[in-house]
Amino acid sequence: MSTASLLTRTSKTVLNVLQPARDQLGDIGTAAATLVGFLLISFACDRIRQAWFSPLSKIPGPWYAHYTGLGLKLHILAGNRVNYVQALHEHYGPYVRVAHNEVVTCDPAAGKVIHAVGTKWRKWSHIPDHITANVFAIVDPKHHNIRQRFYTKTFSQASLRRTMQGPIVRTAELAVDGMKADAASRGGGMVDVHEWFMLFGNDVMFALTFGEGFGLMEQGKRGQTNPVTPLEFHQMIAWSEFSIPIFLFGRFVLSSFWPWAERIFKADVCLNPSQDEAIAQLRMKEKGEDGRTVFAEAIEDAKDDEVLKNSGKTRLTDDEIAADALGFRLAGAEPVSVTLTYLVWCVLQRPDVQRQVENEVAGVELTDEALENLPILGAVILEGLRLWGGNATAMRRKEDVTLEGTMLSEYRIPRGTTVSTQAYSLHRNPAAWPDPLKWDHTRWLDPAQSHSISQDRFQPFSAGTRMCAAYHLAMMEIRLMTAMFFQNFGGARLAPSVTSESMVMTDRFNLFPRNHRMEVLMRPAGS
Ligand code: HEM
Image (tube, rainbow, N blue to C red; front, side, top):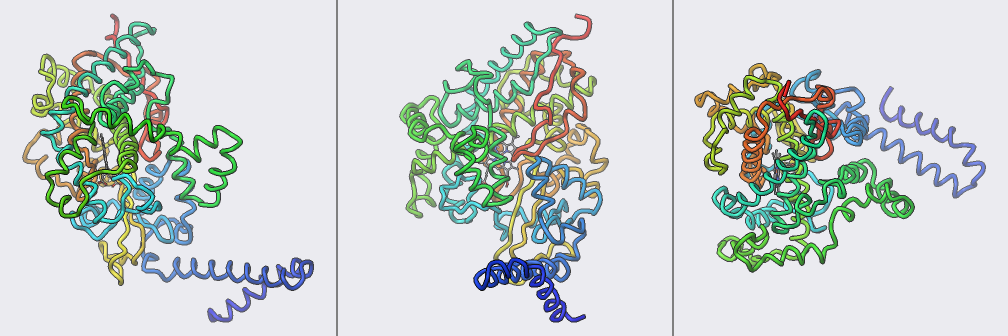
């Protein structure tokens, strides 16, 4: 049967189905019902065309994904994207179609092209740049380049060691003191270390953006305030992606009646302290040399930056500062905390490695420079980031530049298709890593081997132009907190409540352990 006659017969069937409604409503009703019918048919025909005839039809994937992204969206809403995509890769291989217009890949060659410096692949975002985007979310490369330049010097390793090492050490000491107090006051020395790492990660971000003194631990606000990014923020983004009408209904109707709905659908508003308050706090530190905020540093550095001077933009506006302050908290607090939690989890499962780390850090001066040179510490951190990095979830990109689309491996990717990579799967790809599921820090100990591990297959911080802006800050936090943990809690053991199931990762914009806790016994057995 030809496509034309199939369409004619389908339209007749739809009109017959709609007949009772047409009888009831008269001419206007008939016209409206016919219009709706034709819209539905053309939508269905378009989806069938994309499923069967788009170049993406050659990419394997579940049958429903060829027609719709609903399956993927439901997994996103459930916080399960990372595991769903990994399961698809295990079943279908390195390229999988996850929606009529979306593909995921864990092929290092594709990751190299997509995340290269100067790539044509743009960050995917459904929020337009003009709605004061933070540096994380800006799509337009020129716009992004300008904003990124403000922070280039501030986030360099040398600058961070000067400005942030002190606050990080002080924040880590508060966390260690808190853990000790919990261990002393609770039966068996049990401590939820994940909670303390979350407080640590969050408070370092407060120090970065507001200056010291605003941290939750310093203010004794543990337990009173939701420590880090409310999970509702992810749900807000997921709902806005799932369906704009549902999102708007939630934001403008449901939020007026129920606080839980407000926390989800207005999470951005709930998260942000009032803008005036935030800006006032940020500015307070602008003049003093000691403990200046990242924004004061950035604005100072911008005065000498030729590119910024030539572009005529050497100040950040209040809106941009507020957006980036929130962006840094969202992008910076949780990945560090979660990486620390999983790192300790991995090391405590290997008492032999735990002893090596404890011996190596014992008595070492707590400076980033000294810790950077410790081989075992460095190796366990890298192996932790490989399997359990805190931000190893989807990095979504689009190539809208090349009219005829672009090739990834043997597949033609039509213009406008979303392609995402996730480090979680790249780092578990057997074509990229020998024995990939084995947590084996020794793969990083042989310099010949570890130097050959290129950024194509190791991307816990992404790569290229959109790589983590604060990579050096993150590594400094992880090194200092890990060293302090193993200096202070020799012989720590995992509590029986910690299992592989409790540590399955939940995907909520950042990744978290499913139970949102990880209990450790801080006293050696028998003591
Ligand atoms: C272990 C800790 C961290 C990990 C694993 C991590 C990972 C990542 C990854 C994978 C991206 C790219 C996301 C994408 O392209 O969609 C990214 C971007 C970013 N990260 Fe991090 N991050 C960490 C810590 C931090 C910290 C402490 C900050 C503090 C400010 C931070 C700030 C940012 C920013 C601003 C971006 C956006 C960069 C841009 O688009 O120009 N991250 N990070």
